[in-house]
Image (spheres, rainbow, N blue to C red):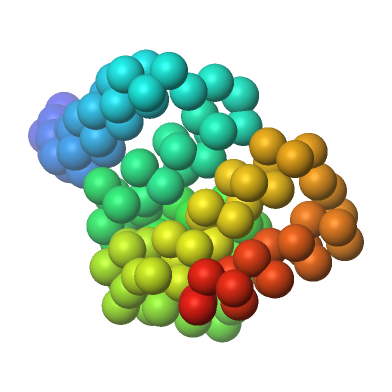
Length: 122
C-alpha cells in the first residue's frame, strides 16, 4: 500500500510540476503586462494552453465541456496546431479577448468572433 501511494505521489508530481511552473510563469507575465479582468483571464488561458502541450489541449477541451468524438477531434486538432499555436487559434483567442473587453455575450459575441476571425484570415 505504501509503495502504491509512493508511486502515485511521484506520478502526480511528475505531471503537475510543469503545469505549476507554466502557471507561475504565466502569472508573472500577466502581472508584468498589468492585465486585469477578462484580458487577464484570456491571457492566462492562452498562456497555460501554449505551455501545457497535450495537457493544455485536454484542459481546453474540459473547459469547453467536450466529450466523446468532439473532444477527441478538438484535442487532435489542438495538438496538431501546436497546443493552440496555430494562427486560427491565436486569432480566435484575440477575438475572444476583444469580445470580452466589449462585454459581448451570446449571439452578439458569436457573430463578432466569427467576423473577427474571418477578417484576421483564420
